[in-house]
Image 1 (cartoon, rainbow, N blue to C red):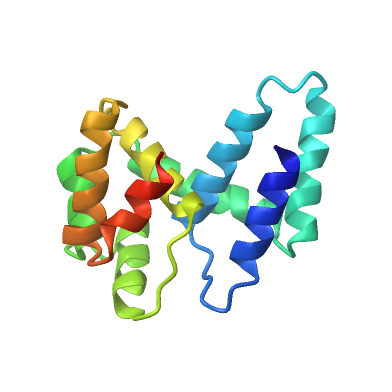
Image 2: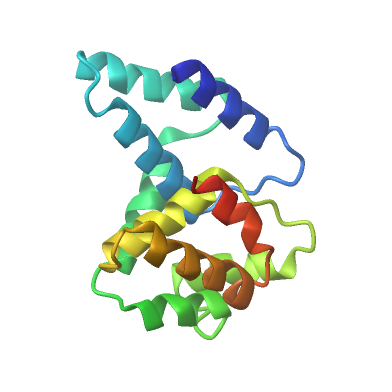
Length: 158
């Protein structure tokens, strides 16, 4: 599992199109928390996470701060609030800024951590975490709100 996440993360961050943002940061931390939550030695699990970020040339403190900021912003928001931010109606919000940047970039790159970040936002705002609920929301957020190809995101959810 650790080998897979190191390889996947490396391939994502060395791609010339990769742009780290708070959704991506929230996604990678959510993934790592889930994968390592039952690791028998939690102090070693923390070192694994730090080593992953260091090996990929990423700043762990920055990633944690971005993710925390977005998570705090999403607290108490509704689905309509999130969709307004993703559609570009609210560019003053952290999510609105990310959406505007993604929309403006013709060659914007989706990665599974971005998708997991969106899933975490769905969880924070209280959406039912069932595939019959999540898939249509992800499709709508990616296609209708961000203007990106939804199948990329929905395939990564499997």
